[in-house]
Image (tube, rainbow, N blue to C red; front, side, top):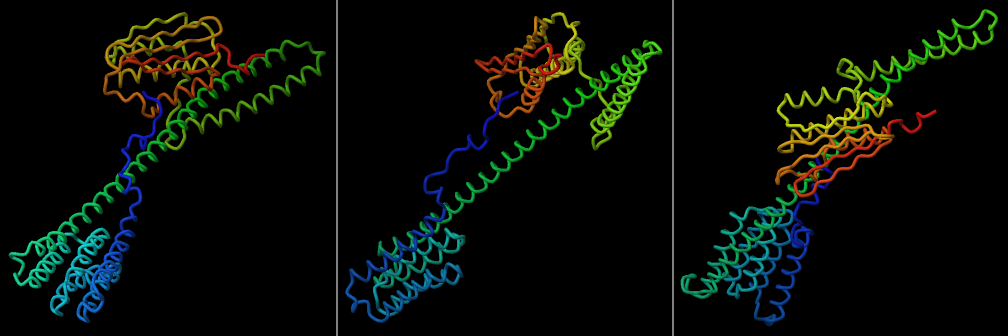
Length: 392
């Protein structure tokens, strides 16, 4: 019993850096490159030695190959600091590269439970052995090991959050698509019901016209041959139109499931409708005016269907009594239903019932207004007694 809203509009926006998920994957290699350049610039080239340069190449290869072969890249990143220590070089630059490389690999999908301990132990051993303490008394060694674990955990957490947002957006899009399909299906079904009511009434009126033409033909004098021929031709056209209308009705009524025809809705049946919903347990304070007045078929059917849907919505979503007013005054039919709604009622979501009522009112040349204010929900329809275009 609600208006339209966007499901996606209610979803919280992800963090700024999550809106560009590839930014970190492109930024991490740039940061690694900057670390390599800074290490080469801050330490004289000859102090790196052949062993240090070899270890640096191994670490760099781990970053490059890790994009295609993550486990091989992980092994090279872990080997870099150990090779540097074995060659007598300072492993500082290599274990920093290993930390950033571990973050990049876990961000791309490698398990943090694997990459964190592997690189962390390698860093701890390489830095600890280089300090001659086997890591036990060197805080830098523990920092190197803990940094690898933190990088793996961070990469895994960001990847998990990115997958969560992707799944959430996917479910949201599916929900929006499903809701739009349901609304479109509801509109099509309501238009079909309108067509059924209209064609049922049209078929009846055509039959009545045919009978009047036949009566007029009988009343003509024998000398009125030309008039008799014109009436006979008109009766033939009406019969042909009636046959086509009945064929259309048969298709509309049966559809694809072989459903039997339903009676044409009429405003005169509203009192019976009120009694039915009262028997179903809904408390209705009904003020019904003179419903014996003749209405156009579209207006009559629209008044009944709008009343029916308003009471159905009040029964489903409202609480307490519903106050219903249906009256025919002057050139308009007024249908008004007021009921209270609970604080948890979502009166802004896409209500298929409201869409159907608006379709009904529009088809009859009228209008439908819906307001929800302070826990009070009001549906008011004003329909013309004579549908525009049906006047002669």
